[in-house]
Length: 116
Image (cartoon, rainbow, N blue to C red; front, side, top):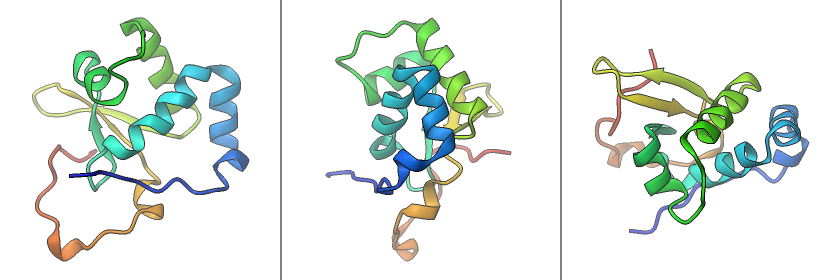
């Protein structure tokens, strides 16, 4: 199944995205790449191996660089990091549903735990 997600055409005018890109270019790239990989609620697993395998399998990125990118995105309001009850790391894109269209009658329960 093909997965897609909409990115608003005015993202370049977003202060949070611009601040992220100016501070950490990898973070900005990863933010854009993770959109189509999120579930319908805007959540994705954030463990190093799972995230890189799903979002950027061909990019060379270290675990430290990924952690720095996540922290940068969170500082500028693009993501929220959290852990599930079993301590699995997750990321939620807080504005994801604002721009996505979904046929909620066809959506089952969330694939991943939602943020607290």
